[in-house]
Length: 146
Image (cartoon, rainbow, N blue to C red):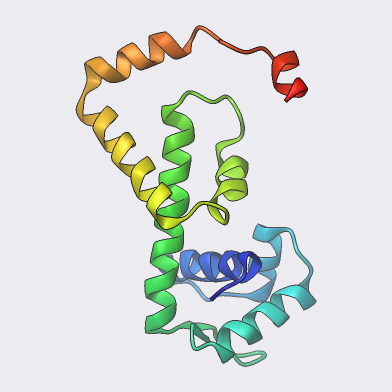
């Protein structure tokens, strides 16, 4: 099982591999805002777990196992970003999805995906939800109390 940080490394390696460009450690470090030694350590672990082929100073290759898991990780992130947009949150969807993705079980993510699809396929209901959600039930003080 991958740790949240290894999931992040694999997700970015996979995402970069989709662009058909050479994957560099520096690109991963910049995207994830982590140090180069952290990236190298993560890539070595992913290599040991057969998700990628990694040798220092060589091209990083995403193996079949890594492609399957990487695709899942990218899709999971996409679903959570869509959910944040669908519920009308004004937060940074990228950061919020990143905060959520490692802590929700697959069944919850599937349920979120069903809700998104349901609302997308039922524009009248989605409009009603958007109108309803524009009326805030709680203010910031209420949330701080909890």
